[in-house]
Image: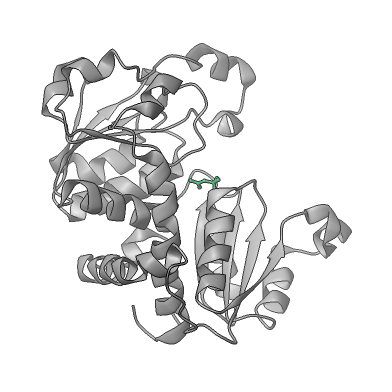
Length: 301
Ligand code: CP
């Protein structure tokens, strides 16, 4: 059995293998070819935090491959509301399915779930910890749009609380990308994470690197992680990508965002050729197909 809890659970070769497999599933993800290789398999989606893309794209991925999905989204409608603990929930749910996808507000919850599960567990986001399947689709999008992963990439926004960033920077370091970290001072990357990637990363201002960039990866301020509303108000609205920003970039620069976005990208940017975040959200389907196939059908990725 193999869990996917953090991006370091995968080697560079294993990541490439997933991206290559995802490429083969793109037409299946679009519905133009059918494939029933997960027929008879059941995925359990356990979401203890809101989600649109991750939950739905796992569900679509499973169904497009002939499998089925059971969902637990509303905690008030489950026995969690009666006081059941996470370990017991996982022990039981893992008897009903072939793999579990879990999102939880606490860092470490997915690892904890894996310790109590009889089937593979996939981390769909644990608090401000990691979001490894998002990272795989981010890498897929970069490779698809730029033709390589060793790009010059600005990572802009909430680097303190964004779990997508915490996973992505480790993967980008594995693939020798050059990272430019840009954030309000209060939302800078935690020191222990910066130390892991310092050979490949610099803290800069966006205007100083704009002309060099292949990718700008924008993140939302993670309001829900702030211990204090007043601290959130101090940084709210402190950065925004606009059409004006794009006047100084390479013509083939791409803008990515894990979504949801709030106000950090001006709506006019959505209509430009640079905006790739909606395609990025679609690539979540073939990438999650590849992850599910590897998790459910083989001992190793
Ligand atoms: N990117 C992402 O995790 O989106 P959701 O919160 O909608 O799943």
